[in-house]
Image (cartoon, rainbow, N blue to C red; front, side, top):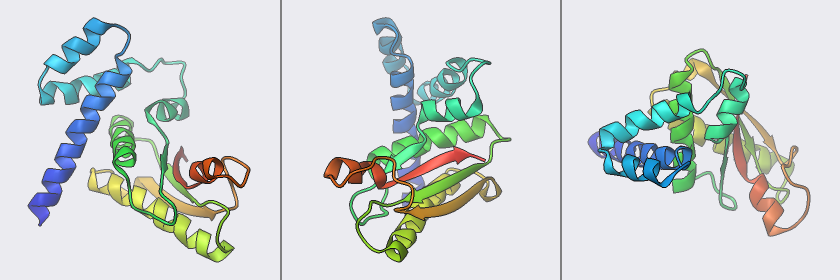
Length: 175
């Protein structure tokens, strides 16, 4: 069981590293062709290099985190991490490993449907799911704090599926 989990997380990390390299080095076709021709180990190394080399000294750490992705989204009434959420959290993990002084707060949010108490509990489960994923990637628990805002801080106002989808999220912010 433990070996299966390790294999799954390793595969997800390698896929995330490959995706990170291709999205951050899309300046020219030759860059993407050379990054896809390299092996999995060099893809992982190039994704780390791409994150650090694409950042400028003038960019704040919060802007660097936003570049790698600081928000993951959830399905209705769910705290299960989708594949896209796992990819984003893998990039966050790489960011945190490159910035060992960074401490983050993961904010859990819900859409406006449901009671205040229910949405606070759901936001907590969403923030905890993101935290647990980062912990599994080797990030120290002392660097991660969670908080739930439930439906109190919507990212998008409105009562449509589009706004509800944007509000079902876990946002990682630097503390």
